[in-house]
Image 1 (cartoon, rainbow, N blue to C red):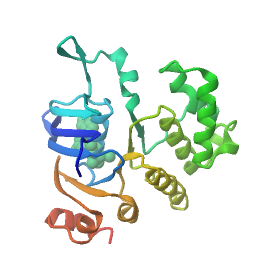
Image 2 (image 1 turned 60 degrees about the vertical axis):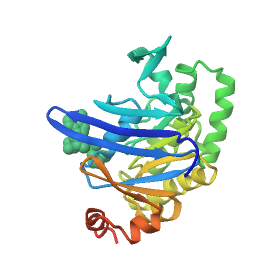
Image 3 (image 1 turned 30 degrees about the vertical axis):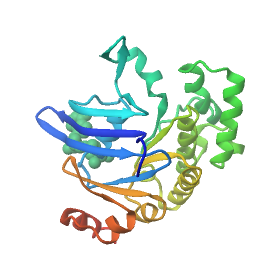
Image 4 (image 1 turned 120 degrees about the vertical axis):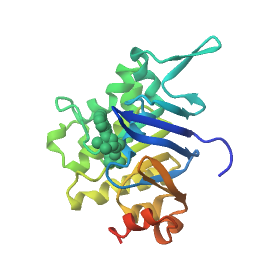
Length: 255
Ligand code: ADP
Ligand code: MG
């Protein structure tokens, strides 16, 4: 890829206590690209995504999104660690969808989707509501705007979570195993929504074990193991012809 990456991670290090979980991760995601991040449980995938979204602070290296250093702000010519009260606003360029959807149970579907643009970005309610309805239509839930999360299936709730993240108009979307808490028959509808978003040109970094999705939708597959990127390339190369023995061992469980 050429041009400037939307997400650029260099030598990212993170430790919990004495355990170093990220040991120098380098990863770029270019505008419009879909990158699938694969790796065994405990390899640091969630920690990496959470670092990009400022849910974790890193101990070394640098992450930039759209050229801005994540977790820092410029005052004059100096960089300062971002104060907590500014994190929510700073996070708006990065949307994140989790394994567990974490919708607000006492708000309607529409209420969940409009909450952050109104509460965090202070955008006008009428405008946000129009946008939220469009997003709900896009994820196939136009008729569920007034329902409560408990009235929806897991797949529908996850699609609301996707609409909620998109309502902030992020430049980059992070997905952390978005289908792994779903009953098997509901996985397809969520992957279908993600496929539509990819086709529209949304920039996405997706942690998933859905190898078929990676093969079909990803522009690039990155394999993380032991806190470092051990392999990165076109899906066909990484999935069908991995050069790294650890990638091969991992994939043999899915194929
Ligand atoms: P993955 O998503 O690839 O399964 P994680 O990023 O969740 O991996 O975890 C990587 C390692 O970091 C694991 O060993 C996990 O136990 C540890 N870890 C993750 N979060 C924390 C935390 N908040 N405190 C301590 N250890 C953590
Ligand atoms: Mg994880």
